[in-house]
Amino acid sequence: MRLLLLGANGQVGHELRRSLAPLGEVVCCTRSGALVDGTPCEVADFDQPASLPALIERLAPDVVVNAAAYTAVDRAEDDADAAYRANAEAPGAIAGACARLGIRIVHYSTDYVFDGSGSRPYREDDPTAPLGVYGASKLAGEQAVRAHGGQHMVFRTAWVYAGHGNNFLRTMLRLAAERDELRVVGDQVGTPTSARLIAQVTATALQAPAASGLWHLTATGQTSWHGFASAIVEGAYTRGVLAAKPRVTAIATSDYPTRAVRPAWSCLDTAALVSVFGIELPRWEDELGRVLDGLVEAAA
Image (cartoon, rainbow, N blue to C red; front, top):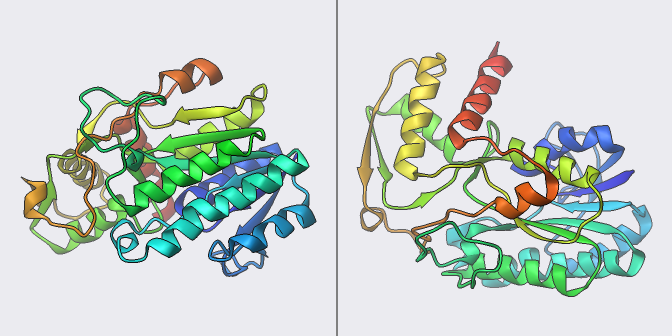
């Protein structure tokens, strides 16, 4: 199998490079034409959506895995054109080429397609109502992928983090090493999901009998950002990643205003994914422990 990986330098892309390798040849693409370590790779510029079909035609993969996205949630409010180019127009152009050439596409979306007013985990067929530009652009992207009618797998995920890159885990570890107290929003609820888990599930799904559709992909359980931060601090301190353990204080969303409104409830129902692919998803706490263990091993 030849797999074209778009967004290979991102959190999920970095993990996909490892999880997809056993499936065949992985051809990496980044906007700069180089991986983080300087290794040259193919160029895929999501700010120029019209350039992407030619790339797919030239490389002729069996599968395209699109892990590239515009993810600056607050900046998107003032840069909507760029967000829509990367999150909607580019996936649409890619999916059109894939449908025409008979290539399978994997695409990722977000819990931000919902408004967060729910009281149970959102199912795939629940009404969408994004609160901001980022969520709206991602919703337009998943709709564009599905509309082209080719073989596709769209995975909505949430609260993505990794032991590398820029994300909530890395930010909390940095601040915890600098401060005696962390003040973290306690009234937004969701499920922290590691890039590692997303990549592993993607590889498993690609080895299953071909299926097209939209599925929710997160770890299991739920917590607030405050609960997530508390678990990060406790786990990192226990493992010696942090020399001291700062106090973690819960605050209200209103105490931490941001340019974009975040959904207050972001839990996703993963029953369909588990049923179709026979996947056992871990508790978010257990997965966090594995990511922290990886940090310890990498530093050894």
